[in-house]
Image 1 (tube, one colour):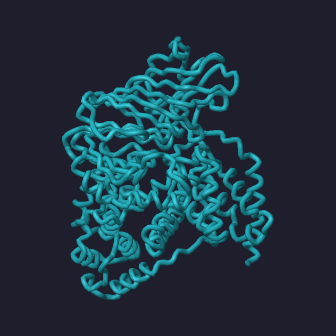
Image 2 (cartoon, one colour; image 1 turned 120 degrees about the vertical axis):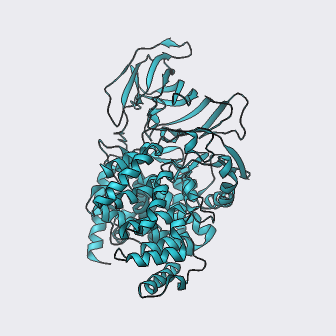
Image 3 (cartoon, one colour; image 1 turned 90 degrees about the vertical axis):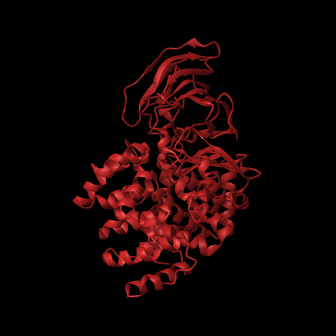
Length: 615
């Protein structure tokens, strides 16, 4: 053991103990709510969906539990029009005021209450520009005939469509009545219908408590396909069968997850495949994961994303980061859990391919941000920042490798026993980084074992920027074969002569990522003629391929790339292309022309990012 690692371990524990002293503060810097005085326990919604005005209107009844003799309740809002507020079942009018508007956090809604107040009813309507609400014209959907609405509440956008205590540390149950057009189906992160009703009125109930960022609603021309006793998929009619084919292993994934870390506690696990403008790969709304259509590759090669969202049913939805500074507790655990599910179903070699790509992405992110950038820490400081803009894949991938280091240090069997206990004992509760590290210490007595502390270097992983030297190194025999083919190609072997039989999406992503930026345009053309990358239906491969085309100015690919940017709204898959285009003046001009047409179809999460790149 190196002396430097031994000292790092000691320093890590000193910092760990210092942070643990403030473990219960849990002050949410992104919420106005006074949840330490009075907290929401149940939300009852009654909302009408108006596609013409692009608004939701109705009321929210908030059941509250008073912790102190509070004189007021403070809720988070942003862009809501408040008509009136009443108290209790008697609907006694209440005095209320909206505070100063902040461009990120919105305005606090302060409502005067009495010691006998048990519920508050807020009558309101949303803004057509509400950040959480994506209103799609028929032309923006797969079917091209009917409009579509979906929400994206994470991280702090729930307040743009529901007055609430919009922080991950506050959990509540909810019920809802949603009124919409009778030719459309409404679904939520709750118990869901599988057929349209004659009057367009739908009722929902979520019996398990959730934080506000997991509130979700979608309304559109949807059909349901069953995948098993407790799983199924919703999609537009033209994509329903394709979606059911892609997710055929969903029941296997649920069973594999349960074998690892305990029972699935949400009754059903269904998927909703959204139109292309959805800004993320997936959103782990309980009981109904929202998923991007970009994972419909046709060969089930991108279903790791489904394993990721399923894993959130334990890490995130069940045990939740108390604040967005602790975001890695959601995503790092989920990437780790995802990898374990994929290993259990598809084997170690497959999961090591995923882990290798994860490490590549992590190194690229750290290189892009800078190794000393504080945003490369696991424990973040997002003061005065929008969490959507402040978090990166550091939380996901650095978090994964820290937990993988824990597994390799403690041993898989003890580590699995710890995680199973962790999820069970802390179910339906918020968790801070410091709380988690205390659980880790309690189980493994790290401070009593200096050699163990030095192996883990907790401080370097959690509180320091960059990637520690003791990061686990995945090994993939399959990618070793890919590397040999890259070398052969660069040494003169014709593209058509490369040994690529049986390659999956992951093989091709690794192949394309290993090509040097200095690759000549004629070699790019040769690859395209051999493998038809420009005409690929796989969005992940297209993103990697188009980056290569931008670098070499392969003009043949630019029209298909424009079509891609116009029809893919997933931030992860468009951001790298705009960034690459913005590196040259000509590229930036072209990007702005395309973006002017594409932006109306993007979600605010995506266009806020691209606005910054092309400003």
